Length: 405
Image 1 (cartoon, rainbow, N blue to C red):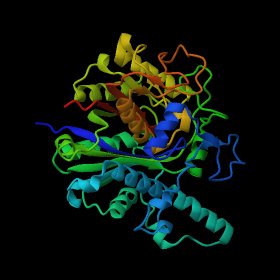
Image 2 (image 1 turned 90 degrees about the horizontal axis):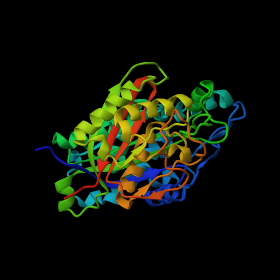
Image 3 (image 1 turned 135 degrees about the vertical axis):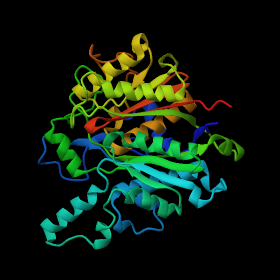
Image 4 (image 1 turned 135 degrees about the horizontal axis):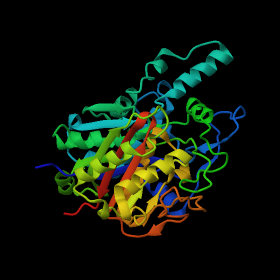
């Protein structure tokens, strides 16, 4: 019999609030956390706004490792993981360290290490320390989380760009179902990156003032930063120890349409396949989905293509099921995005609240129309589907629902 996998702990650092309670308050109040970027000087760019974590110092959560020897994406990942571990009371679960795994997704990894080294070369003609360089490879994000939390189970980093958070969540689910772990800390992390900002600026994809997913007048996305972690556990073990269960992770779907390095397939083929696989794995029909957390970056191509895919997948119900994109509130946090959105979905299920799409004023006939506009809405959420798309055609979808005994 397949094991049931549930979510028992949540940790998040985001531009609208850090810690699950502040984050949820930001969601429910429709907070917009984007503004002028402070991490680096944007004078050379035509746009200047982004989403940064402002209310938490990730270094406060690091006690065993040397913060100076690891990059900011790792700082954020450790902080989110510790938040989630404490929220789940995982230390009270009686799990052996070697039975707890770690899997994080990322896009840019610790690009801050390269950027800081470049600054040193330009300003002081010297290089960063070897200790810092040794923590540049992407796999060190998960290994640092495991070392800081003294965990010895499977450790993996998934670098599938902006879909990576959902990929990490999916892998964690498999570890538990296959009996390779009793619990897994899964999520995603990406710090604000000058290289990432430059990439999207060169693509002409950054909106000058605000992000407006699915709006007819949308002008692009915004680069953001953040991290989120979720604790996945076997349902029976979680119930036995009296854990809080936010939601059940019912299924996932992965695909890669490989249509273009940066552009989505115009007919949304990969997105349809990913959603179809996730629904099949969950044993659900499209009619049963209560809420869709869209990838919804705010670019012309993404929102129109995702809408096409949703209409193909959901048919007549496509314009009935509520849809929102929280990227309007915090920007696109890259590899952390779908992990943060998974936290939002789990809380939406627990509290019966639909997250809003802020900055939405004029519907676009090319896009889905049942957007939750500008304010959170009270409505039961039994099943939530969350999409995440990435460059190279990497696409991932997860489905979660109420954990019914």
